[in-house]
Length: 380
Image 1 (cartoon, rainbow, N blue to C red):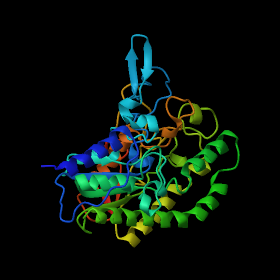
Image 2: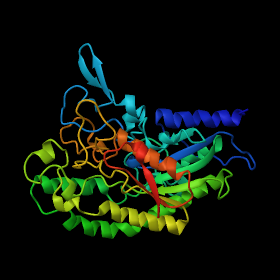
Image 3: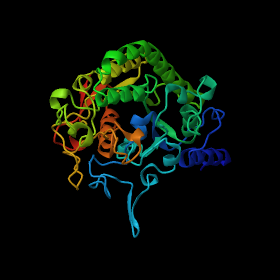
């Protein structure tokens, strides 16, 4: 039975998640009170919120359902229309873009069966920390750890997975500079942006470490003991095929207009995702949390990979790309660019599901030409 206090908590919780409104901080649960319903919770930024889950592969066809790739397509008597809320629910309005296919929702076959996504597109570590720890609201919502406190009080949280740090490094601005370098035939963006990354990386590591500490503090404040739940730090997938594996030549219109990957060869070979993963792994080791390295999860399914294809009208998880293209054609929201699409979210969900079966630090790998059911782990 859930008492009056529990009902109040759940009411606030539903308002927070379903309606995307701010949530006030809450008092800790009474000592000894053990919630009953198990839950896996995801926190962080767009790579785990489900940004780009609207898309099943890519297509240069801008008409109708874009060759079957646009899950927001609605065929009406007056013509085609698009409703992102079909995919992102209430968070289509505030831009958090928590999709119905977000990574965490693919672990439902494992006990516990409750999955809760608090991540928000564009979030930095400051948007995860509790207000009491210096966290700040974002897009009309309370800091994610304040929301986690509510979740943890109303459920038995068994695992928390965190993907964060990319926005602390200014990832969106870096990508923009790489696209501009291609469109203007300028020097590779890595020549100027590597120094930016080097300067920001130490602060990013410190901020992610502080975020992990605050997750533990949040759960301790509502009665959780260390070891009673899993805490997993996740890296980022490599979004674009390396230059030698790109299916469009650097010169000519196809790379931009057809493939949606206007990036110079030199920048395609930039090991930025690897650098971020290596640094996050250091943080995970220092804070003694499990590490899930997904840098190679999209192998053979990266954007513009010669081993993958665009949709021919019937999207195919085994052969199509798992990363949303850089949407200069304005098919959808530009913010969805270079994010895991619905296939990619499923792949990451498979990675997480497999990771929950082990206590080891692992890397997750995809198989070219195969579906997400072929994902496999390697110990680190």
